Image (cartoon, rainbow, N blue to C red):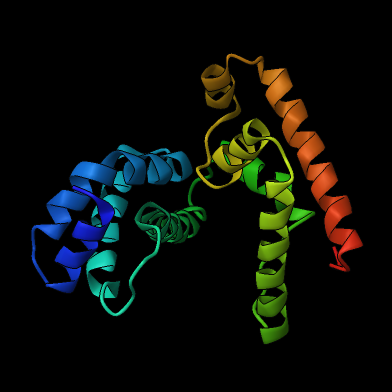
Length: 185
């Protein structure tokens, strides 16, 4: 079923919207949650929470891109769950991933910091559009989908060191780009 029809099911409050969403995007949703939490049970719980959140948010929202909408919901739910559990145990790989970008990007709590975060997101989008498709996808796989270096290397038939090198160069280029745009780092 195409995304427009699935969204129409949500707007019509048709409960078949959930199984249709699960059928089409369940693996994506579960993958995003698992890459952050590294726990099957927690990722399945995040998947169910994503369907519940989508049910409550559509309507009034009408997503232009359903997989991105669901991915954002899933990522936020998984990150909240990660924060909750992080006091007791750490996902060292995810901690490493977050630390790779912490010197470049940061989220804020004040209105000014939130405005700057939105501005940085726009600059990040523009920056990535100037890169090759391969580099963009590697960046997004690592920092949005939380894929491991080894998984990305396997997907592209690259060595892990090549993937690390690409990511390091992209981070350095992004830092320079943001500084040129007047973003304080």
